[in-house]
Image (cartoon, rainbow, N blue to C red; front, top):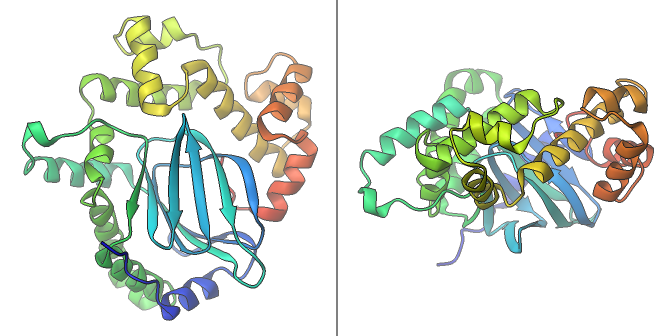
Length: 303
């Protein structure tokens, strides 16, 4: 089935909301518009749960041997925050324009629970952290109405909450929504791993060990390690290190302290080790990466 074309009016609405390179904030805190005019290769990213709709240009994500396309024909949905690597195509004449939509996790869980009441248990699929799905007319339609409302404050105030709810529904009811909903469930092995990710998010700068995390999840170390890798594509130690480095990257870009102070704040005892790990992960020194982040992602960049 062919994907619906992205219309010129939809592109124009997005372009007006994203006049600057990088992430452009909108009146809705969980909607941002990215504008990029540069070809990017092998960029480490860590997206929040939600979806990315590329209206012009193209992106590819790489995680654990899998390739995820998100372009005018596909969107990327994210059930749990996972570090992966990304490449994108863009140019000054045809900049990449993408809508970044962060889930309201309580609303997403509520919609997922309602949808799952209508699905036989046998039809449920394995949870996945990333899924790439084809764009469908219903999603293009709600994006058009959402961008239109973002240009009209009165319309946004009245219709905005309903449009966001519909967008949650369209993603979760989409072609691969079952893999997302499986990750939103708070039971079975996946639920324990998702709860563990929340614990890591809260305490990533502490000396967390895999046995400690497994015990908190009520799992054996081998089962925890296997379940973690299956869902996130990373080992627990790789995940914690990536989270620390991405948090540090934002702090450096926002000039929130010296390198030594930031290294300590994200859990590194040695500034030298921090600098080595940082350059290995981002392929640039902390100072070089901070400059790149400010130039390409702007002030509302995410980890």
